[in-house]
Structures are given as C-alpha cells and as structure tokens.
Image 1 (cartoon, rainbow, N blue to C red):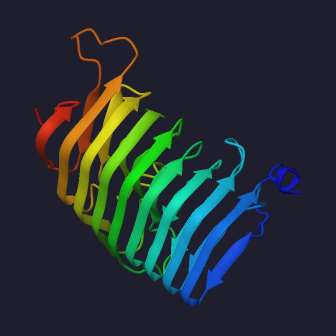
Image 2: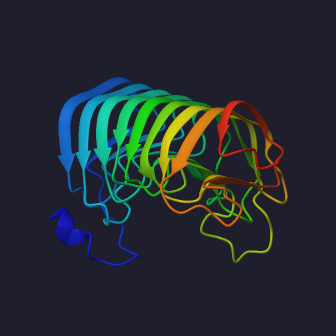
Length: 265
C-alpha cells in the first residue's frame, strides 16, 4: 500500500506508521517498518522517549518518507537503528531540547538533519542536539542543518555532529539557510549558534564537501569544525584541489586535520 500511495502528488496528507504524541517515559524497540505511506515514526510533544533497534525501509526515491521525525519534544534518543528512506533518516524539528541520535546507519536518504526550521509561524527554539557515532552511505546529504528564508524569529543552538562516517555522500557537511526558499528576498530569521562538526570522515560525491551557507539576516555564530577528513574520488580542479569548502555569512573556526582546507584560507 505504501508504494501505491507514494505515487500521489502534493496536497495529500499521508498517514504516519507510528506516532508518539504527548507520550512520556516510552520505549519503541526491536521492530521493522517498511514502505510507510508518509513518515515512518513521529515523536511529538513528548518527554523521555527512546527509539532503538529499529529497521526502517523505503525506496530511495520515495518522497516525504522520513525515518524518525522529532518535534516539540525533550529527552529523546534514537539509537542502534538502520534507516533507509527517500527523505531524512532522522529529522529534528523546532521546539526540541536534548535530542540524541547515536549509532544509526543511514542510507539511502537525505541524511541526518536538524530542521527544517522556520517554516511555520508558531515554531519555538531548539536547544541541545547530539548526533554521534553514525554512518551514512549513498545519501544526498550527511550532517545537515536547514532553515527557510523569511522565517519567524527563533534560535537553534548547542548542536553537535561527532564521529560520523560518510560513505559516498553528497554534501557531507551542510548548513543551508536558504532551504526550499531561495526565491524569497529576506534572509532566514533562524539564529544558529554553538554548532560543532567533529571527527567527520569518509568520501564525498561532490567537490564542495563542506557548505556553510548561513543567513544574511543573522549570520551563524560559534561554528566549529575539528578533524574533518573528506576525500573526493573525481577529477581535481585546474588549481589541483580535489575537494573544497564554501562559507557564506559565517566565520567558523577550524582545528586539527582539515580536508578540505578552511574556506577562510
């Protein structure tokens, strides 16, 4: 049934396979969800929820089939799971506090994402996200933060991506504050700060392996990259550089091993 529903166009609100709503002190573990009509798992307005040892499967071209989506919740952990979808393996929306994603294998899909942020007027701040010890394989993005232009005012802070392996990933590290809204004139009003990318290594499928595209209205603050080692298997550019980083409206700090080199060089 899920594969049939995927063929329908936009405007159809598809059901979610499993929803935690206002759920406290809950555990979902040791099961598989295949070809959901829409999102596979949602955690909304909940506290102290653990999703672990879960397998999530959907075709790589299936739209809006996020693996686990978390919104307006606190103290949520996604652990020890294998997720392959046509959208984000894990998406962490606004209004969350203290979210942990650990030992997750992602692919296919759009990566491990904070956001999207700033789409709806009633969104609130996001604080404290740790994504660690994860592996992404053949995904469109890796460690991603995304927000809309011309958004309501909110902040997202205390975000850590650490110990991540990229196996053939487009956009291994990306902040995109023009997500799905580049036609709008005003920059994003989502204020990003205290952002850390640490010990991220593997193979990029794009020459620009690190993209930090922050808001013109509120440039990113406190962005740190430590021990980044991303190779590119394609041809080198005319200046002999194989892989690059690109920055806009941000002055990140770099330390340890850096491949690609700093975008501030």
